[in-house]
Length: 200
Image 1 (tube, helix red, strand yellow):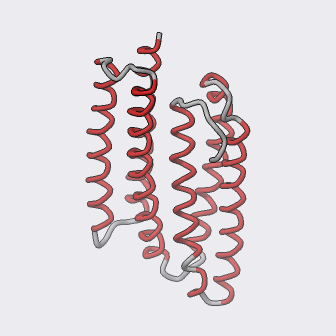
Image 2 (cartoon, one colour):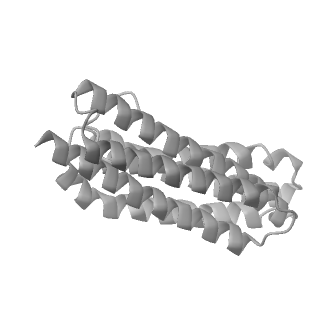
Image 3 (spheres, helix red, strand yellow):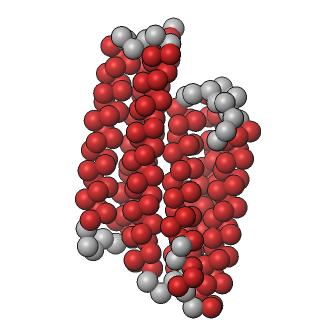
């Protein structure tokens, strides 16, 4: 995202999802050339759909970067729909190959790394904003950032453990990613609320 944005919980949420989309597309694009002709065609179609939903998601973000947090609450419904459609395309892409379990595991690793990066980026941006607005001494902001860092560490440990596990079902991996996305959203909202309250 190249445009200047208003920093709030929704923009951080959207950026982390976009990073996860990009990581997923990157890893699954790499596997297409190893597929047989029919499977390759199905995989390319699914990848085209993934790119289309990712582009729709990014366009909505770019169109709304200057909007308030309240306005973002309304567009989140559309972003959630884009995300759900992207997820359906991911499943279609993985199903196109013979070794869907291995491909899902590769996609899981890329997505897990993108999530961890999202946590780190959000924490860094909150710290930078706190310094910029000279509220780094606010106990509530410090506490919220510390809690977010602790939760980020827990998430990283959990995702690393799953990345190293030899046998995990796609359902279990998908459930873990969903759980850590929710944890990010919750921690991010709390940290941004503490930040906003400190500015009052």
